[in-house]
Length: 116
Image (cartoon, rainbow, N blue to C red; front, side, top):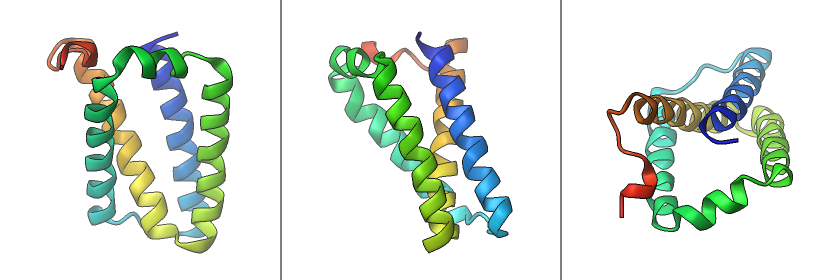
């Protein structure tokens, strides 16, 4: 698995969030996009503290499947309850995570296991 699987799952989740945004006609808020992006960065910083443990859990297919199902559920409920903030937060987090994966891949950002 690894970064390719992570990117593929993030792309699928992003497509779901964008589809729900289009479905309900929600516009994405720049503020909430930025907050979601900041949340993704903070999560990566915290997760890097226990990189091996987090990676060991994340590599399990059942954890990945439940995470993707949860993202789809959040998209569905968020689109119904509070489309602009929920969909914007999640899209911002996913776009930032994909950018992060790309930056690690090309060597601009060091791999998280080397951070601490």
